Length: 261
Length: 228
Image 1 (cartoon, each protein chain N blue to C red):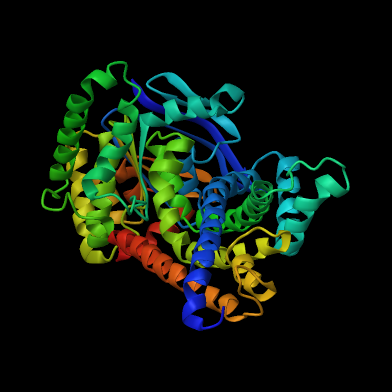
Image 2: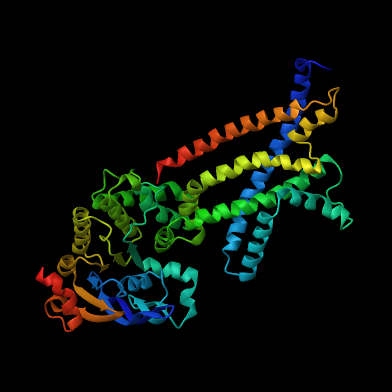
């Protein structure tokens, strides 16, 4: 069964149509990469999935359940959005770590706040927080940051910050983890360490959507690739189909430099 | 009474009492204006246009007119114009009127400082909180507030030092703060008259008080240096 189904998503800002009738689906444990030039709408698409933007039209389903329907105001309610967006995790280009918290606290914060609503929170607070801390440490260790848990973001490199951000997103146990150009703010040396952990997550069968400019990475790690241009999905297929046998001239043009190089 | 050494303890005693009133007005203003400023700040960001417009207008009027005039209006208007002297004629009435004027005035300045603090925080902090499923109030209190405090401390310190000195404006409605106490010795009080030095002497109180506050606020800034 499809974990995610996106149907006829459209989005305009002012008078510019940024997303035009976007449709795609993906299966659990798959990795989907979205490539395309800047301004093609790929980041906006990801932001619509995380409800940071609200699509003007279309339906989004997770595991068969509607989480967004542009024709139903119910899905614009803050409480409904807050619940539904937990299906998705988000890793930002600029990390967006909370500067006043250590790496560990960054990973734990949202979980701790969530735990306050548990019925047995008062009686089991210590236990619950210990569990959360244990899990958070696990995610940070998985990200290769066991030595860095008590550092503040400004004491970490960009690559380390991004790995903390990934751990923070994983801690919420999303069905689908989204990456918005996760290495675009990093120099080439640090890019490698972040791509490595994303690859490891793919091997562990994490369902992921990755917006990226790293073509080689997209080709290696993805099960499916979407090429977007001017708000449209121009190509949608396996990496082999999209990279080696693109249907559209625009795709060939975009990939030209990458394939020659 | 004549020699300076004879006058000094009498004057200092009087000024101490006056300065207590000064400090009281300072603290009451701070305690009232900080939360009210935050409320006004949120109001100016409200989605309900009338609230926004009324508050913007209010801030314009309060920041656009002298605090001294505001003190006079708040103190005298109810009695002289409405024939309903809500403040009464004694010191506690003058203090209450002063406190109201100062709280309103400073809340408007504080609200603008808060606004600056809020808009200086990158939108990514909001979005990170949202995608982690936090509520708006959790994002404000757990994520943005401390970052905001760090950013507004320098302008806030400025405003707080100014407040210490501005309390002297309450002299205009005869609140018995330190300037009033100093001035009393010019007109004549406790056997001393025609003495202007007590008024000059009050400056030392302000100076020491603001020196201590500068150290304290600097300490806060240092405390928040652990993150960037």
